[in-house]
Image (tube, rainbow, N blue to C red; front, side, top):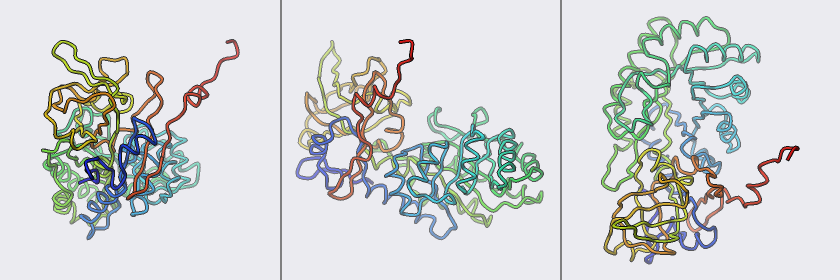
Length: 420
């Protein structure tokens, strides 16, 4: 569910008119709904309300500080994968004890900063990282709580570029190697291996991979405890999918929670979750305006002012985003197949191919739905295009939470060497 709907024939974000927003801010722009962010977080949290759970929103899905603070005020923790994301979480007011640090390539300086910020735990992904963390923690006189990220070699049945739980992927440690690594951690100074972590992929729409992975996780916790290790928490990552297409119906949080309780509820562990797309995906749209329409042979192209540098998911992941005309009357017109493309000088600069849509023309506004996750965070200035702005709405109010830079801002970011 989201809070983008037609009122008096015009698409609104909550109670904010999108044409008015486009006139004020300019297009393209990202627009996020506070009501949707809050609803999605609360529905997920309520599914685990009887449990001792910490829900760490995955910042990489949408890292705007206003989005993070919105979720943090509801009690969310944060899952970070870089010092930059950690600094964003802290700037948003998230306490260190509600933050976990993931990623395969944490540097020693990042580890030191995270220790100073008092984060809850590191998700460790290799023996080399474990030894480095022990060294940094010892030098600082601090103790690092850790969970090894265990790779269960489970097929998540999702796009190959966002699957992370197979043996051939770079993430985590093989589950067969995990007992030896926990033994090593027990011998190293200033690290305490109190948890087990697992994340098998993103945009998962089938509960079976979760059930299989959680069974492996429970088995490992039992084996580790049998070997004398104290395991106090399990982090099951995220990955539950969202409906990019109206006909899609990914599992709701409640049946997912039932599988978690069935497989892991008897362990007596604190549960950690790292949802990202599930919280912010449907909470955002990309609003864009048609520049031109043209016909080449039998092909109809709609050229909009958004491009692959603003929303790279279609060309990177073959991703589908529903497209809604901002005019409800136009949305009800007969549909013709057309490609929606942008101004970037790449054949790969497309946002939709052969999509049945009303015959869009110059000046028309359209919204790319379910764009609140992995949209603005992956935007760039390719072709020296200005970075896309972001807007947050709440009821009838809206705020520009990341402005569009000026061309002067863009040029000032670079320096000329003295010999030029």
